[in-house]
Length: 159
Image (cartoon, rainbow, N blue to C red):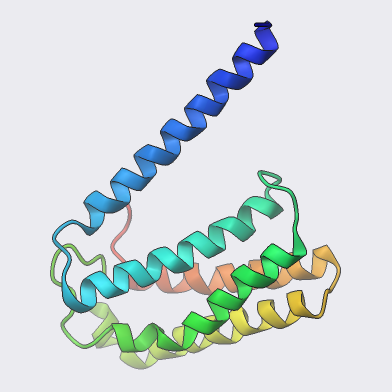
């Protein structure tokens, strides 16, 4: 086996190991979650998985595939309307990462959720219109900012 081949095998193994660790940490983070907290965590994982798949294309970690972007964007836009219903008041018991400020500033939270819904719909429409890759990327970046804007205020910081 050449040095180049063994490096590729080692890197592939490293990638698989990293993915396995990430999957296990997701399971551990959700361990003990029940009811709406578990449903919300699963929902957020779905959003994260679809956002991550699109992001990998724009980071050059995966080949750009407009059809795949359309599918992932469709999931995001389809799931977006459910966001606020998964946050009934007081549903921040462990292992939830939701901060109490979510309900103290409920109108702002709802506005941020509406921004996410609008941005995810715009991403889906841009991708389905078969816009240039740069336009789809710009729509994706705008949608991503809505996620971050909400997480910065309403989610416990990651350790």
